[in-house]
Image (cartoon, rainbow, N blue to C red; front, side, top):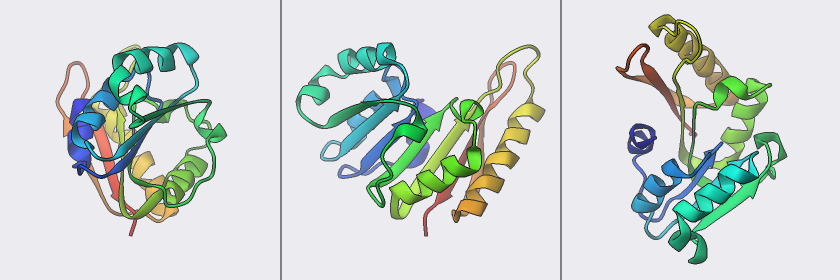
Amino acid sequence: NRWTVDLLEINPSDRVIEIGCGPGVGLGYCLERAKEGQVLGADHSRTMLDQARIRNAEASVGGRLDLQLGSFDDQPDTVGLFDKAYSANVIQFLPDRAAAFNKIYALLKPNGISATTYMPRGKNPSRAQSLSMAEDVKRHMKAAGFVTIRVEELPMSPAPAICVIGKHP
């Protein structure tokens, strides 16, 4: 989570959304950087959102953190609301990746940045699986309109994490 948030280069006044925020670890890293901004965490699990709220209680009470229950498909179709959008180990669960990246693109302001991190799980995860997902994500990002798409790799065992980053022109 920290690696992905670092790659976003969050500015103090940024508005950031984490798709599939889980227990809020990444949200905390975002809040450290977006000291004057706002951070939104979306997750389909009320239990995870409760943990995120507790973990980031000060920001939640202070209005800098907004938590929304529901799948990513359930999130409102707001346009140009965020400077940064990201997810970590969520992409493999989204049933329609093309639609997801179109929605992420729409959520971002011009010059906004999207980061999608993936680390293969399951039996015998491999670097090949990581790179295959990177290619799939790049393809969907490009089709959605993202530019300056790049892949970062974080060596881990048994397989690296990859992060695909794209910019909304």
